[in-house]
Image (cartoon, rainbow, N blue to C red):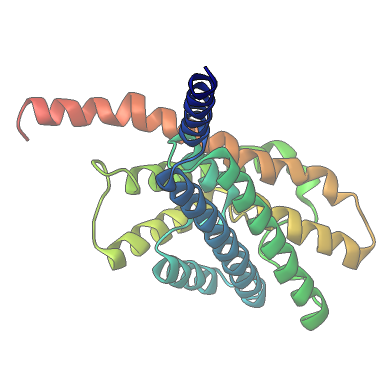
Length: 259
């Protein structure tokens, strides 16, 4: 009888150990979680450093349009992804499920933090935001035109980005040509938003406008910040709809008829 009870106890302990083993995370699950954390940390660091360099380079250009295009072109070549510089493009990746919500939030924090740091350094080093390529001091005189220009420019830029990063619809696979396509699209979009001198980047908009207001001591322009932070996100949604509903229709017909 005593041996029977000891056998039952041993069997119960064995079953409990087995249950604990089954419920505990496997080595594969732990490795996958660790890899995900490493990816998020790496992407956040790249977002912060890239946004800092991009912001500092843009501000140092003194508003020269050709210099801005060169800086963007080189930035894309160095990173091969525009996502690290722009929360609206990260939002596109989130909607396409290329990244998770946690990685998206950390990327945006890195982008805003890097842009703030870049603007702060320029604030103390350059000490002059007069030619900063973003907001016009008189933008309030033509708010409707500025909003329309920002929206049209953002939509064009985001559509080009969505198409270029689509595996089936992109214009080119070559890295150099890829950077050139994005840069030309950016330049064309800026023509439509010349009133606000936009860069279609919410993180950059917030950082630059903040330090411009600090420098001038006037916070009136800060009320128009929503134009430059909301428009790129709205354009990102429109670009995705365009890609899925319109452009792919023509692509499917092209495949159907063998062109």
